[in-house]
Image (cartoon, rainbow, N blue to C red; front, side, top):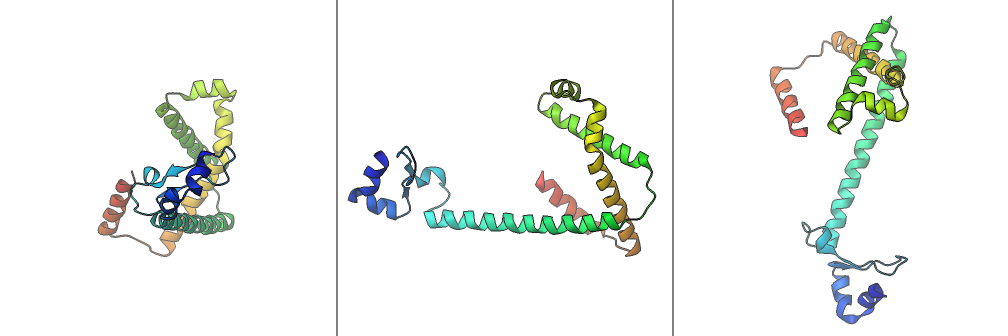
Length: 171
């Protein structure tokens, strides 16, 4: 096969070993070689590329772990919340989700009515689908607002400006 010709020859063996060339070992069609520098030109060696991938995976795993802990904390907070929350708050939040969904559909060249026709859904069924998330969002916001009040948590204008800048950089 083409891959084994390149991998087995002495002429390409050194090139392969240097990490600048990689042969597609184990590929069923036998044609799987590629030149490393075409796929990751910002790296000088395969080891640098592997280290970058490893660092990105570690960062992703750390972020996922943080998100999981945060979700558990919010779940505990929401479950511990004892409050008489008007249904109108949940309905308004569900409606916000529907409007947001409509906006995202419009960015893709579709509108909510057309989406509902294609999927066989109604606006009401869409609202019902968003209702659990809306309830969780409302309860989370109310619980966090109460914590801020009870703990007298506040932020300075400088802290708010930094946060606004970070949000702007993210978008």
